[in-house]
Structures are given as C-alpha cells and as structure tokens.
Amino acid sequence: MNNTNRPPLTIVIPAKNEATSLASLLPNLRDRYPNDEIIVINDGSTDGTKTVCEQFDVRTINNPYSKGNGAAIKSGARAAKHDFLVFMDADGQHKPEDIDRLVLKLLEGYDMVVGARTESSQANLGRATANKIYNWLASWMVCHKIDDLTSGFRAVRKSKFCAFLSILPNGFSYPTTITMAFFRSGLSVGYIPIKAGKREGKSHISIINDGIRFFLIIFKIGVLYSPFRVFFRISIIFFLLATSYYLYTYANFGRFTNMSALLFITSILVFLIGLVSEQITMLLYQKNDQK
Image (cartoon, rainbow, N blue to C red; front, side, top):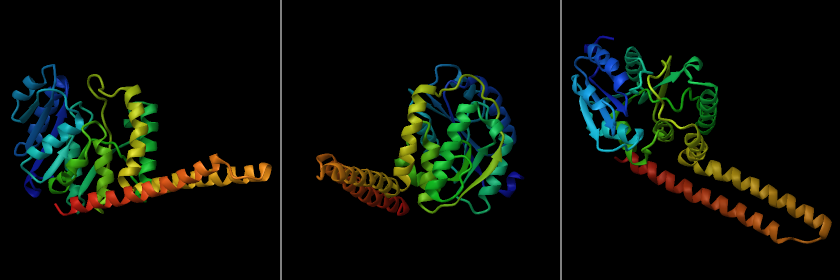
C-alpha cells in the first residue's frame, strides 16, 4: 500500500530485554515506514534495549522498572501523535509487511483489526489448545466468531482504544480485555490471518503462573462482557442442586434440610450478584461511550 494513500501511523512496540530482535526489527520498520511514528516502550529492560533504540529514528519511552505489557501498551497509546495505531511485539514474531494488511482492513470501516495466528504459528500444542478455548469461550460470549482473542498484533483507532484505558490490565491479558470491550460497546472488530514467526530469545510467559492466570481470565472475560449471563448459569446450577437434594431428603426422610436451604439461598444470592454486576457493567460502558 502506498504510504500516501493512507493516514499516518503510530507503531507501538512494548519491549523488555529484546535488544537482539529490535536490532533487526527497527531498521526494517523504518525502511518500510520512513514517515510514520514508531514508539518503543522500554519496560525496565536490563539488557541493551535502550541502546539499540537510540541507534534508530524512533521515540523511546523508558520505564524505570517493569510495569507489564499492558501498561507499556497504554503508555504508547497515550503518547501517540496519530489516530491510527498499530501494536506489535518486539520479539520478531510479527512481520512488518503484515502492517499494511491490517491498515487496509481498518480502512474498510472497522474500529479494530487483529492479526489472527494460524495453527502452524502456535508455539506448542499446549499454547494452541489454550488459545482455542479462549476463542471458543469469547465467541460464545459475544455470539460472533473470534479468530484470535490473545493476539498482540493489531491495528486500532486511538480515539476508540483510549476510551478503555482505565479497564485494561497492566499484564499480558490486555488483548483479551480490549477485544471483549469493543464487542460489548458495539464497535467493529475484524481479523486477517497471519503467520507469526518464531520468537527470538526467551519468552516472558511462565507456564505455571500464566496457566493459573489463564483460568482466572476465562472467568474475567465473562464478568467483563456479560456478568449476568455467567452468574445466571451458576445460579441455575445451585438451584438444580438445591431442588435435587430437597427431593432426595423429602423422599427419604420427609423433611427440608439446612443444606437444601443453604443451596437455595446461594442460588438467589448468585442471581442477585449477577443483576448488580450487569448494572455496574452497563454504567461502565455508558461512561466510556460519553468520553
């Protein structure tokens, strides 16, 4: 795509100890996008990341300590001069030549376009399985097929993205949160297939810690997008358990037990929590829509 046929871009790259990959990525980006803004958020790196960034014509935001991938993304979005933002990783997985494809899709009328990784791009079987579960759950929540919920390679309009900065986490789960937030607000999200390369260097994701975080995010997705839909189903489960246990104790002992009462009360409380959460969520998104 001819650079003169599109609006100017701000390319935001969060980086933590990625000196090796940045040394090849930054000159490639600068050659392809000589007139666009490139921002590297040096997230408390202890290697030569800062030095490498200084060698090229890019803006560098140096965090005094590591704040997290999501926090770096938010810093880059706030500092961006242009309305068309492109987020990409610094580890060499995302190809600069795919940026034009993202932007072209964005210009079709989408508010955000995500680079969806093919199955061959997944790091391993465990990561591929986890992403499939992510995508399935999110698709069920939004009643719309989501090709890649956790991809960090995406193009978005700053005016839309910055409306949700207050709800984005500082960790690696920002792509999940912003995707669900866009769907919840009725914004348009598109996907293009990409083949991600093998990352350079060691991944910052911990199998154990991020495995636990994975299950927490699954619940968070539901509560963020449509809490009543989640809590209502949990309430139904408790109600069915209470009813079944009551029928059992009545048939065998002819009485209504404390456990049945506890299960019925739990069902009602979960239902009410869902109602209140839904109202809070609606107020949150209404507030963002007014910004």
